[in-house]
Amino acid sequence: MTRRGLLIVISGFSGSGKGTLVKKLTERYDSFALSISATTRSPRENEEHGVHYFFKSREEFEKMIAEGELIEYAEYQGNYYGTPKAYVEQMLDEGKDVILEIDVQGGEIIRNLFPDVVRIFVTAPSAKELKMRLLGRGTETAQKVKGRLIRAAEEMGYISDYEYLLVNDDLEEAASRLYDIVTVERMETRRQYQFVDNFKNELAQVLQDPIE
Ligand code: 5GP
Image 1 (cartoon, rainbow, N blue to C red):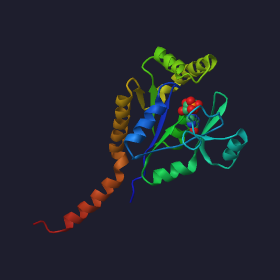
Image 2 (image 1 turned 90 degrees about the vertical axis):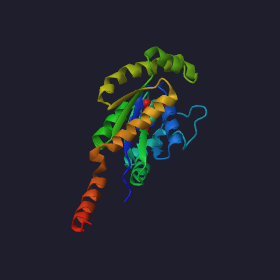
Image 3 (image 1 turned 180 degrees about the horizontal axis):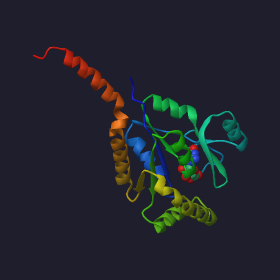
């Protein structure tokens, strides 16, 4: 029987590098599946439909909500973002560790729906560095950068709810630490009940057999 995968939420400030970090992790290890969200925001340059997001109109998105196709959704900076249900369930059943890269509102909903979830908050090493990264991206207007920093100040209030805080200073290092977190979480006794059950049954059998 396949072990059901772990559900992992990764949230973090815009500009924390969480997207690149997750990409690195899924490229390095094939035990992960990254959920692709639906959104009503317009694609940035280099973003592809079905790769980075499923880009939807507001009407299409609201239809997905009405038909119960989303596990959770949130409004962020005037746009809808949501997690499609079918893919996540399928991947968990196949034993993949599924990563949801979602905002703090979504993270809270997921914690209530899946108490077993592991939640990790990613940040840049300092607020100044965060601002530099947002400006360096070159894809946003000054006003949008300001909006994302104001949003970061609001998100600070959610950090203490997350099980792990990961400072993304060096990408390679942060990807390794992220993998370590997942490895340790998988080793928790409560997540290994199948192994314990099998061991117990086998031990009963071993005890019945003659000892030579
Ligand atoms: P961006 O526009 O920079 O790609 O994403 C903006 C924010 O929306 C990020 O914090 C990102 O993690 C979050 N986000 C992306 N997909 C989802 C989703 O499916 N649900 C929720 N709640 N947030 C999401």
